[in-house]
Each structure stands twice: as C-alpha cells, then as structure tokens.
Length: 148
Image 1 (cartoon, rainbow, N blue to C red):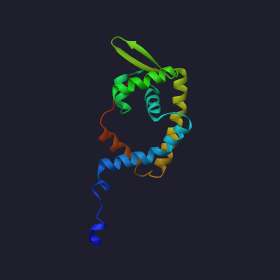
Image 2: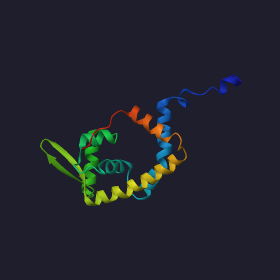
Image 3: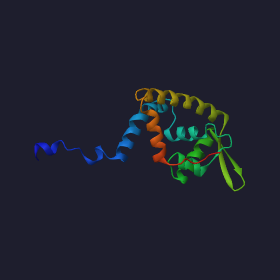
Image 4: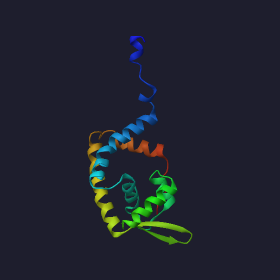
C-alpha cells in the first residue's frame, strides 16, 4: 500500500449518517452514565421526557415514534413502567393514552433538569453555532409528532 493511500479518509469518516450517530453517542454518553447511576434505563428516560408536559398524555404509537422504538417493544416497556408506578394508561375512545403518574412526573422533572444542564454545558462549547445546528437537525429530522 502506498504511503499516500494511508491518509485517505474512509467513507464513514465523512458520511453524514455516521457523523450524526457518532455525535449523538458522544453528546449523550455522559448523561446516559448519570441515568445508569440512578438506575434509570435510557428508554425509560425517553418515555418520561416525552410525557413531561404532556398533560393529555401520549398514544403508544406517538411514544414509539418519538422514542425510536417498535410499538410492541414500547408496549412491553410501558407494562414494566406501569408496574413500577411511573405511568398509567387511560382509554379515550378507541385510543389508549399514556400519562406519567405523580411519581413518574416527579422523576421526569428531575431528569429533564439534569438533561437541560447537560445540554447547556455541551452547547456552551459551541455557542456560536448551536442555534443553527439545532435548526438544521430539526429540519433533517422532520416534523415531530404532536403529542397534544
């Protein structure tokens, strides 16, 4: 192999999807470690964060989409969270809505506060470009599910 060939970047080193995945992992690993130390699994955090501020609750499908899970997997997670007293199911017509219990809402509020502090520390290192970055990521991600 020639010496000049050795320094050619690999495809994945400049591939948008790989960069997004690596950036997400790097940005979230510290917060995920704090969740683990508290005994909170990342999927539980995602559900609680999605339910935070959703007084009317959220459907299982909306939760699955927002939390990046398959609906059957989400249903099993919600069963465990209900058994732990973090969420309740409420039927509205043909739809099942999920709401945080008082204990779930309290835990969500604590975790959201920690997540905001983690995000602020991360964005402080990139203050000049953070608003544009977040806008670009929202555009790439597309419209979010309206939980209300």
